[in-house]
Amino acid sequence: MCRDLHRATCHRFVLPPVGPVIEWPVMSNNQNDKVNLAEKLQQFTEHWSPRIVGELNGQHVKLAKLEGEFVWHHHEHEDELFLVLDGHLSIHLRDRIVELDEGEFFIVPRGVEHKPVADAESHVLLLEPTSTLNTGNVRNDLTINDPGRL
Image 1 (cartoon, rainbow, N blue to C red):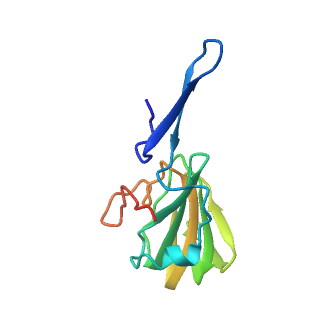
Image 2: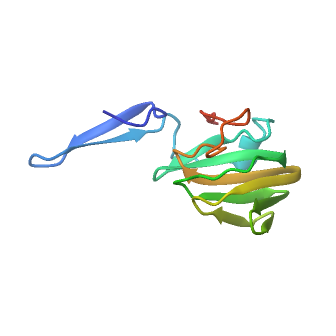
């Protein structure tokens, strides 16, 4: 059984001569096509609502538009990469603030409480395991259980 419900189909094969059955999911969109980030960012307007634009090695590549303050939260089992594509992002940690400008990224280690803040609209690329919930250990009106795909 293919375990990734976000995928449209699964492929399977048996290792010779008789081995375990191995299955892997195949994305419904064509992963062999290039992705234009500017075009993808034009397809949505909501803030703090990441969209999946790719997947590799169990990681989602997401785009998000951020403005204002997010909630304090942490991800118990996942690291989270923030790459600023446009604008400025402050990532508040309990002991410091990391300031990111266009072209800079920061990896928030698993278990570390953080709060992203964007004083003006900023565009970011996120790289995180497919299991990552945007609000981590917090459930509220900003929680996105199933981010859309572009």
